[in-house]
Image (tube, rainbow, N blue to C red; front, side, top):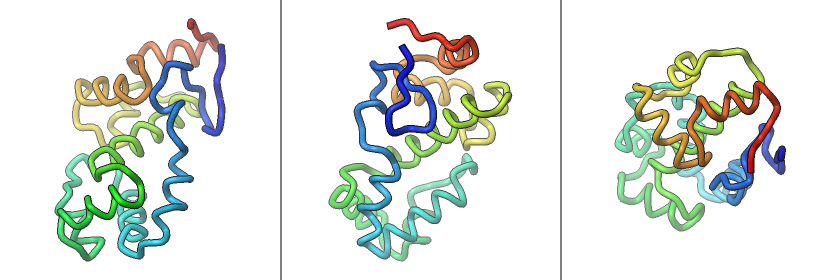
Length: 144
């Protein structure tokens, strides 16, 4: 069963991402905080850098690390690390769905520094391994 929903790529129905509001919705909520708006721009510009740290994001946002996570929790019910991981995974999904990249190219372009980390985060957010997802997208089939 194909499930596109509000996303621009297919998600298996059991995917945690399929049950969450879109990143665009999250972005629209955090726009009420200037500091979080700066964070969003920082993530958009830097997500492909595997060396991003909370301290870099906080500095870019003009707040302490603790205050940044407090703001994220208040406005988006998340943490910096979860927001960054989710943003990266959604970028990976777009690349798998729209382009003909290898999984190695995809995880490298999206800021993951190892295939193990990529696999773990992908399974956490999507509910299956990247190779399984890519195979199903390529063959246009989903097993439920």
